[in-house]
Length: 208
Image 1 (cartoon, helix red, strand yellow):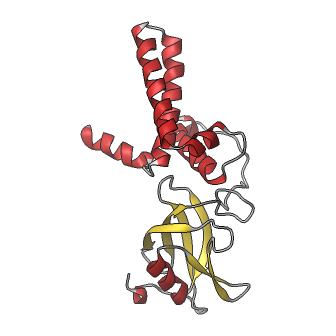
Image 2 (cartoon, rainbow, N blue to C red):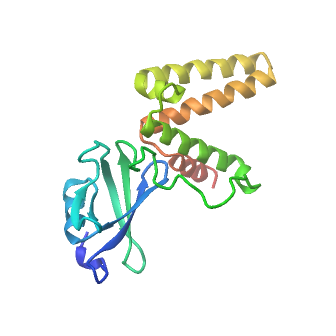
Image 3 (cartoon, rainbow, N blue to C red):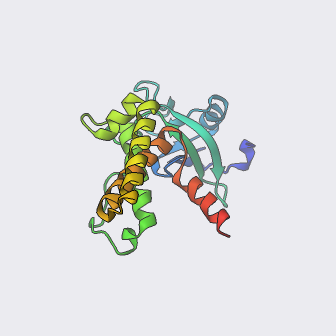
């Protein structure tokens, strides 16, 4: 990236939106100056400029919750950055997956939010959140702790259950087991750092 393309404000800063490269969830908004942007590019980890302390800071230097950079984009006005990362832990100092956990609107699910694609996107977000925060006692935490072999075993088990239910023409069981299979497939995709959008892009291409 040619740093001269970026338009820093009169304080020498540019806002940087940090986004999970897989789930596409926005994790945080911070600021970079030319030096922290250069360090981010060189190290492939996020460095920011603290406006309160007036110094550079390396995300995760103390907590271990670093963010590995996969790409940095600038907007059409060249005065804002989008940083695509893989987080090694929570983005928020409160221990949350994302700094944007609270809402100003009532948490009522609209009709548009109940369609199948939206539900699957929400499932991907929740699994990404579980992987990052690793809440104690959660089944998703257990799967990530056990690793890919355990996740693959569960995918295989659920796939077998789907086959048996279909063979027995048990509609209710087929529905339940298909939901379990989808869940474990999404856990596997997250573990392998593959996004749901990558899968849907292939599906779209095959049906054009």
